[in-house]
Length: 447
Ligand code: ADP
Image 1: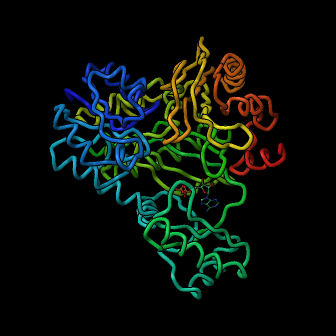
Image 2: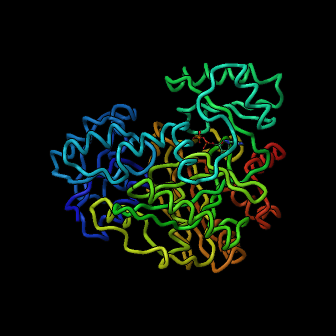
Image 3: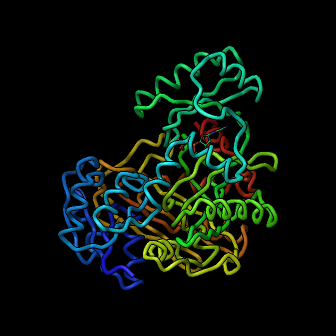
């Protein structure tokens, strides 16, 4: 097992990882920018190292400073959290070259999944169902027209290097295709330094369903069921739940089994998430994330397994603590992402939190790094906390969520809490009847 883990992140996820390290009796080092000197994870860590000024590129993305912090403190492993360097293959390689363990998959696996064309090709080879579309990059208009006609309109043009919901263009008919192809490619080149794009069938009313997987480091793979993350705004997840209201046990076992086998065949190690669009009973792979996800706590709630403990065990060579048959699903869990944003316009609302009171009681978990008197710096993303609620079934979970939202108090800044108070009383949400466009349509109506 590791002696000392350096946490290369900030906010609620830095605290989340720190808690897991403490429970495992592992010493902790955190790195932070000058803007985060007062952060909760800095206060609670055994050691902390200031690695630079507020902008992420000079601190949380500064690989040299982070490696130097490992060497100064004698950390033998790094947990990257999510975002920042968590899917940076070069970072994983550099740590390996310094004999420091990256708590995540190999640089090569990160690289494959970071390139969407390569990821899709790999998924297909491993027997994972994919969205019908071009086999690789498409540059030629004629070829694009042929492929689009074959799969049928509407189609979506996606950047191979895309991420964060950027670099996508929909063509409803052949008349739109030429412009869509050209703009997608130009935008991808400007945004990602890689203008390769590919074509896919555009699914009109899908749900976003993702499968949590783990490779144990010894060639075995398991799955921890799915999460439904269909409630999104600008392709950003807002509300996540497990299990999906749309799946039955049979479908879960089938798609989970396919994913677990693929992970084993790939020789993947650590946590991963295989994301699908789901429509008319069919799954279509869109991408794989090679890290811990923001929404991992809903899976922890229904399985009772600490996924960060498992990540640390696997990275240290100790394998998983559970086999597939030990992973049982119990009840229902929902996560609300609480952002420091105006609940209508979603403009960021940094500032000082004058009062912070979290709900409690059976089945409630709040993951947050903020506290009363904390000043939210304006430099980073606006997630200030996550409310995760568990119940024996979805109805109990929703009732508990409603009362937990009533108890939650955040004063001094605007937050997205009022949005969740609206959603929890909505009939479609109560029925689990929503797709990836539901929230955008709902918000447009409310305006
Ligand atoms: P990113 O890496 O930028 O998040 P994804 O491939 O995961 O890109 O897609 C992000 C979102 O874009 C999906 O959750 C979905 O809402 C939409 N999307 C992507 N591909 C398709 C498709 N073929 N049909 C319909 N919507 C899609």
